[in-house]
Image (cartoon, rainbow, N blue to C red; front, side, top):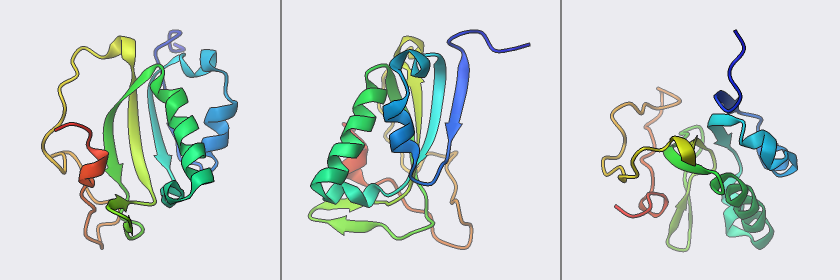
Length: 135
């Protein structure tokens, strides 16, 4: 049985092309998904003006109708330090459409008990404080 309109799940891991795909997808299509899981690559570009603008536009489009419910840094690369910020170059974000969110209590335990290292041979990255919102 095909999923009902508005109840689909999207998982995307396309090695850096996620920005152009999200920005070129009409909002009406994006809103058909209840849950979106995206592994964002090249997040170190937040340290550059044009990279920040690209990431900001992408997240602004998603956050218009979705809340972030989970973030997990991928330990495939080292976290980079820029000024006072830690920038994990690769992180997986889970978004839940706002009309499906029943409570908005912030998570305060990091890493989440269900998190695990992407590469078991390396120490897992803990989500940097600057990415946690208000605790």
